[in-house]
Picture 1: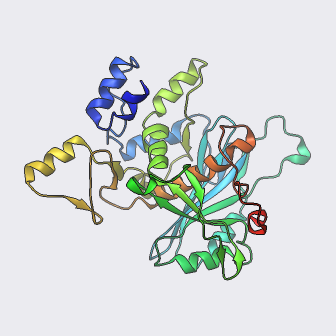
Picture 2 (picture 1 turned 180 degrees about the vertical axis):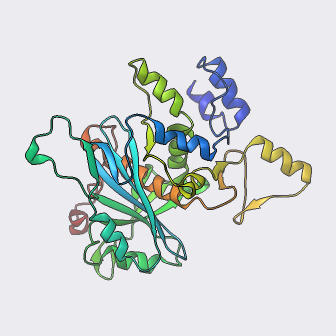
Picture 3 (picture 1 turned 180 degrees about the horizontal axis):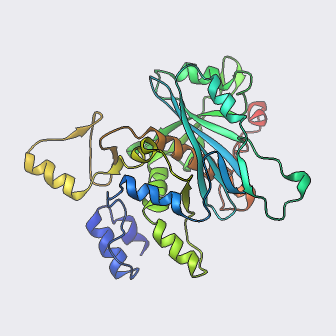
Length: 323
């Protein structure tokens, strides 16, 4: 079974495995490319509902993900819970400098239901940490300079996404880069398997949202956490969660019919590769950074078995101790 699922590299094989081995309907398969703005809005109708800037209950951690573009910094803020659920509580874009990110990090998220939390502990949480896209050279220095600046140091960490063949040598989905100093200051920098977290976001948390809700309604536990959005999410946010998808067999057939190689962003796409189809997907990228940050620290809360941010195994040097 392990060999079959690993070698199920196209939609036909995935459908066959899901139908014959798992006994599940084939209508819900990886990357069916059926995401629409309406389907994203449904995530805001899941219970419990919450308004923008709020979260439904006391979270374990608040993470900010930032995708850096030439015109500004797009960010999303997420709350994570003990059952692996993720709530997207706010989003925005900073056009001038990085100062607005610190202001957003210090802005409390309003908790709607404190449960049995003692009254004196009911303090609305602020961001625990943030991951910010350091890019591939064009804006890297400015991002690194921000991460060591007052108000951001040890709160924001630079992160770079890797996909396709670039992930072959990665021992884990999130790892530390070897270069961990900038301007003489210790600064942990991370690499994330962007393909893996795109799959978690689009193929699992979004595509399987109905399945997750059905299992929980029956008192069963799903193998992946849910994703919920604040009520009445804006159109631009929803659109950017629909444009990132995989290259499918149908795309491949169309390419062959056209008798040409169709390249996206300077690379030849193969079945299963992730790419941006249409408009921007920056908020989606920022959300995958939040998922990467959660993956790295959730073992601290007894969720999963992954490592802990800033506590990776090192060689015992002072730099490792600082990290």
